Image 1 (cartoon, rainbow, N blue to C red):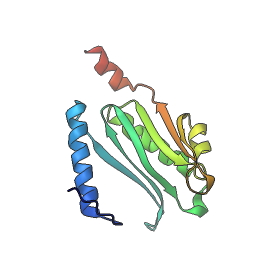
Image 2 (cartoon, rainbow, N blue to C red):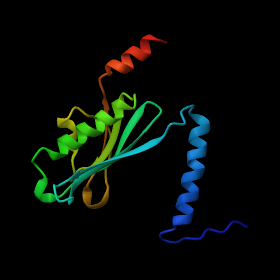
Image 3 (cartoon, rainbow, N blue to C red):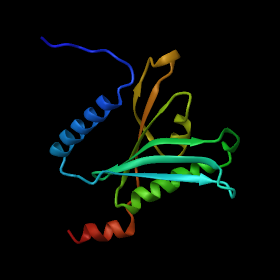
Length: 150
């Protein structure tokens, strides 16, 4: 008989599921180049002002998190972090980016920076929505040269 054990936080289960899904993904998709990245914005004294984390895999980059200290929002720091992430994704030879954000977070920010909304998950907590975005990055000169060699 199959038993279902309901619990709360289960790091061991989360790790196992992640490992199993990674193995499935790697067997289905030829790319095995998944690599995370992180970018910190710090003050002169080393205090964290904000940051961005993400990944690259199979020609695509993804933004996992972008956060700024509240007092530094609206100063262009978020735009600079996003540009730095896009530059890192391009430096790695990838040409597209995906990101998801909640309706109360930053959908306008991503639209302003050239991201196209490709999906919407409605009816999230308290009537919010999750917005899914995609952006094609311009080909870099080095990447263009490499494609000519093919």
